[in-house]
Length: 543
Image (tube, rainbow, N blue to C red):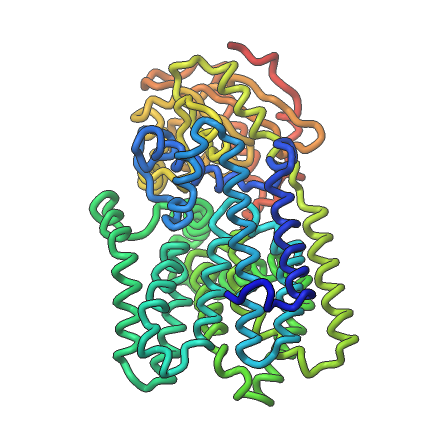
């Protein structure tokens, strides 16, 4: 990296402002920082906490898991070694490291375009990245997203840096960065594959690609071997967990087999919804389509200018196709990878257009992204502190608790809390597949389960099996009048096979029937249909 004295002041100020803006998020008071962090991020924090205190790769402290991407965990481990016991301090440091990675990603986007002789385009592309509200929402969320953005930006830069002469001595560096990218996110295999395919096409030689792949494989192999011999698969448990598992089960429950004509319109709907509901990095889906049209036209008119970066489109397309058309799942932070891969191409496509139109479009995109962040229902996570308080104050100390969105709970309590959606629980999905979730609860002696009616009855209720109506009793309901989706239901599990008395057999019978009457929804936008019968608490919580 160039010394500070050689960097133009305007560029230096841009990156300082971008970094400070991110660092402010890490310094927010806890009550506001809470809304920045995604619940899935607490799975990383809980694993790091248990690894440094108990020597276990575990979220709940007594079951092994591989439901995470290892490279981000490696970054977190030193933080938890140093600040053990200061849970919010560790979270702040994690966000601070995300700020470093995310700012560095913008730097390599700039350096990529500078390498192609487009300094001006590089400056504005970096500025658009650094102050993109929707991008910030997902890179500063405590997950591996910022680190992954950095590594993808490095790969894009190295793809234009790696001349034929450079590859003769620089292949270990490129191979190492490919390995790190695979450890950052397993699905980067599509990006790395596209990059290796590009080098094979460009060099017309197999040896450089083989060297790069060999170095990357050596870095990734220990993780894959650990997964295979510990869990019987090289993939993380999160790959087949909720929501992907539920989306497939919804389809199969209606059509019984994938090999139906209904699959085609179903995939088209999945692709449409995934695009329209998540295309906010460039403003919205309309602006994204317009940019795509401009990019396609410019690539046809000036193919030579885009050829060094064309592989990024292939990598982004394969990445999106896998998640949308195979897993049927498009999480909120997935588009960030496509944003990093395509931003240099978009900057190249726009450089020939009228600057006034570019400025107008850029401001509109940032304003729309800011609006999406502003209206984002952050209040939907207000239930987590309430659930934590119930566990610590209302549930007997020796009892095990199950929850579907359990990251925050598992991180901030030492009580036995099990994950029930399968994201970091390698054992439960096989039980759901045969609708024997109740058998799992009894095997693990889970006496209490708690979550919202949507998760407890609407999504997972049918996976517990037919006997669940006789084996779960409604303990109490804690309503939320402001945001009904935060209403918390607590149910007690009958751990033996003795049926409950008739007056207690109401919880799942009512919950499941209410949600069966609603049409299936991929995006779980059902809070507005919250059943009125559960809008009032059934008596005060009992110890």
